[in-house]
Image 1 (tube, helix red, strand yellow):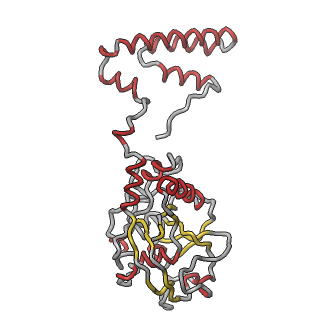
Image 2 (cartoon, rainbow, N blue to C red):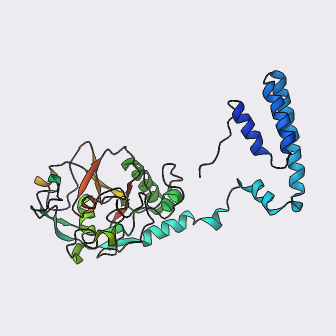
Image 3 (cartoon, rainbow, N blue to C red):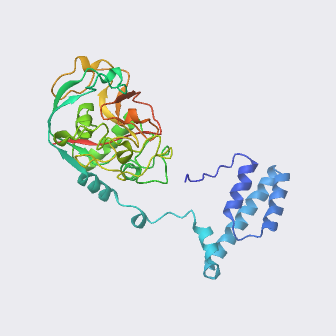
Length: 325
């Protein structure tokens, strides 16, 4: 929930603010003063307003000294905006960093066929072709997409995200926002976290050296492995609830689109390097992989890729961490 900010810009805000300040004063008495000030919103009215605020301050002070005689309901009202005790309600930054590190999965490198290998598959887009053999080196990749809890611990609150779901993937983050998170995490850890390349992402999503050749990351039945348009309830879901893929990675398909480090070029596969490709040298868009809670099934396929402006945010776009061996 967004914290309410009191702004004395007009009469409505003055009246609202005073009502929020007082819980012990009689409604009838308070409204009488408010009506009087409202009707005389001049220099004299302002003096009356100042006087009323002073009176209310001392009334509140006296009340707080006798709060032992109040009911539990009064106590809740008086303290509902008090700062939470962080240690009791959320993990420390250190604990979050340790959790991130523990959830990095080691991926032995290898070769695989990248892109759509079946020319008769009507789900395939032209930018998934031609299929080509690619070799990637060893790397680490996150078991889950970065969550809202992790984002807040490292960067701070993300006002665009679903604030009531700390274990959902962070979303509404641009490619540049992801870099801010990564840079801060690297400063805290001394490690070299980064976004995965599109080749690393597809290799890991397909199961790496343990691949069974599934259409989606972990199964041919999308409902077993992904949150997408037909089962998501039109919102992100907590990570790790669906079946993982062959490497133990969750939510590689669906839930949120995931930023990759690559620039996107729809014809890149025609001249992609065979070893550790990193995408086009320069383009307008960055690469997205995996589909999201809003996507139809074909957009959640392992081989699918999409594009998005690196400065843009959307409520179904997040990211997953990678790291060098």
